[in-house]
Length: 177
View 1 (cartoon, rainbow, N blue to C red):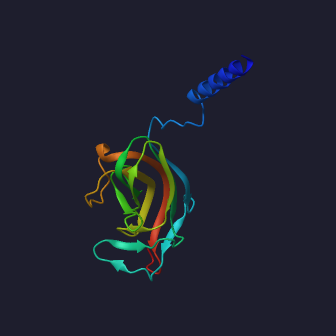
View 2 (view 1 turned 90 degrees about the horizontal axis):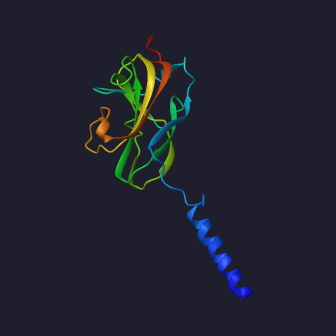
């Protein structure tokens, strides 16, 4: 009888512990985008070396890992998503629509995101559309648009986004700009 009573207690304890266990994480209620580190510091002038060729039309490509610009992000999706892309815009003027550069040479994609999916990624490659450029903010967006458009996605295509105020001047080296 004592063995039966002990067995029942163990089973009850195990059953109760499972239902409320913090080791069974539930997916987050909302998708999120968080800036995890940006360089250089706000107020800096970024000098694009003369050796980076100017591409017509389309500006100058700052190659991955150049050390000129880096935007670290932490991203979470609360929902199942079949395909997603990370787009980062260097804003000027209007904080949502006007931009002088974006990460099209360094725009990662992922497939089959499950609820609660999370990752960190540091964007280091950008295409600067016009120089000089007065950057007033950085807008990062995880989105589901898969049609090749480079403009910011619509709200219905956006999984998560964040905007960070910034103050950079991007100029071309040796041009006096």
